[in-house]
Image 1 (cartoon, rainbow, N blue to C red):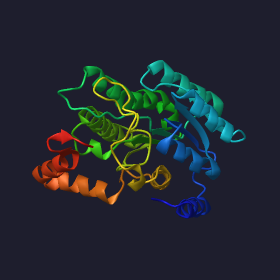
Image 2: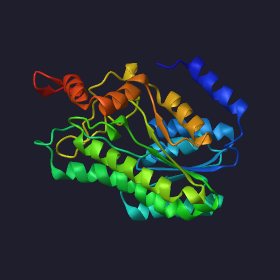
Image 3: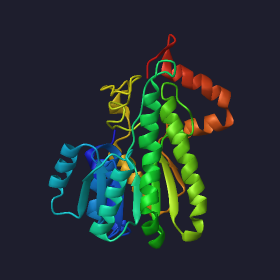
Length: 285
């Protein structure tokens, strides 16, 4: 777990060594909690002008109140709805004049076996995790090209290795990774950088909000959140990677280990994954 002293060190050290984000317009989806909120808390002191959206009006109101004097534009929006995305992107351009960096962070998970899950589970996860990123990126693209900006997709280790009980989530992240890789190549001559970030398990609300087999929120996490990387530390790594215009960022030792083992020893990865997620034939994580 990252201590307050460690977080302060990360933030101060990075703030002192770079003014890359000063006056940059950064649009972040899903900014009311978790990694999205942590990005906002770190980028505002760096001089960034930030627009964010989320579905939870109360959390957005609290965020706006906390930063009442800062250049922060908050919009209530559901990224699975095209018109909501258009409202968010259009209002950001109107408010700040354009977009330099788009961070597609909004996401939802699921926890149910294929044999038990309603089809609505897969539709909802794909609509938010994949199509939400497509909508916002397409709408912001002209501005990003004009400013030679950066597109970021917050993906997952599940975008490299399919996880049991999260087949819909894994599918959405595989789709996101492939799509980002394709548009990275498309936009290379336009000098727009496209990056995807794959955090390992991170402390956030995503597991509590994960959909069950009826496409309803679980309301609980099967993982010990205290042992996971903090969203603040995750945000620090993402911010550094954006400035360096990296292609990919895979976080945590276990995350890197998972990607490598799955690539070179897929059959072994199958066995290790099964052992991690199942006990006595039942999904436990």
